Image 1 (cartoon, one colour):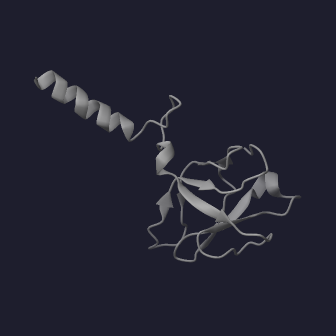
Image 2: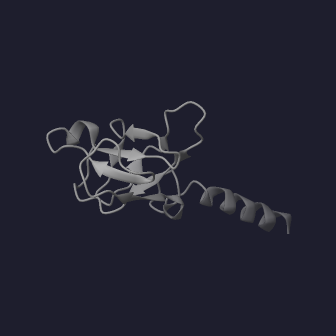
Length: 113
């Protein structure tokens, strides 16, 4: 009986780190979706992202704004073809608590490392 209980706890703990593809990281249902802003800008509205200019997209990728209105650039991140960003996004503003795994809605630029 104790063995089954321990197995259940272990599986529950593993579920927090399993993305479903065998790699460690956030589970797919734990991504925060960030809406696309229609213009190229470095300052999209709160919880929106905007692509960088095509000439620098490989380096800076996209700009986004956290829920508190702080802007950041995803230059040090990788973006998968479906808009999933790795590693997690941390707002650089001191005192801001935004730290999430995000997925960029309507990402159409393929996989960018």
